[in-house]
Length: 272
Image (cartoon, rainbow, N blue to C red; front, side, top):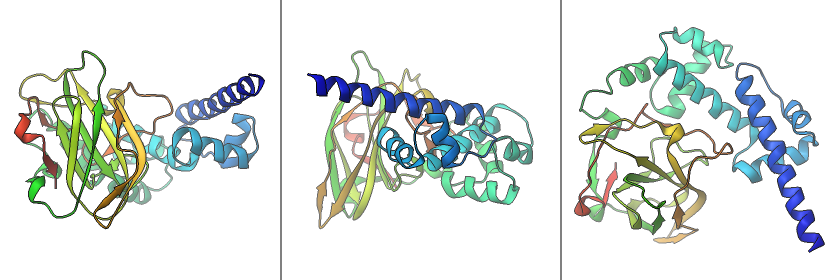
């Protein structure tokens, strides 16, 4: 019992340390933060802080900070009329070229294009990055399948996708949509190591909707390896509210434009 109390106390201390640093990242998004500075805020050594941060969040602290900066840039592009160069400096970049390249590399579109997509989101036509829906049953590659658990009373869609990084960013390697919890299958998955994520899109109205990724339900984050047609890894997903320790969702478009109703025979479609 004594060892259990010590372990629980240590675990709580780790989470509190990481949370302090994430709060500092968010409040000083434009300021450079070295690993040593982060460790000082977390009240541990740089070595232990780096290891603890990865254990709690699933990603290194520097990568988490970059994701927060790009997420802040997304919000400023979507919600303000500030110039791109001003946003660049506001989220901690010293070079407009570096900011533009980083934004485009991660989200798939440059900042100016992202802003145009946001302003056009009320139109029913999906953004180009979401076109090309294909029948998974005919796609070459492996099938990643599992069971999705959703909270009681949840109504909406669940997007399940495989990404090449431990942060859900850019365009997924493959993705499927569910209209409810239960079994799911993603066909046409190439060989490699991927990270499985789910995004709960609740309270959808009729027609086409846009989604606030930051407040959406989440699941997953574990790695899945596909090799020789076999899948190795945990594929069970339990949809939950977002946590302060979740890295931002940096999808390739500002907000998903998705039909509010998916018929059962459509649930096996994948984003090409």
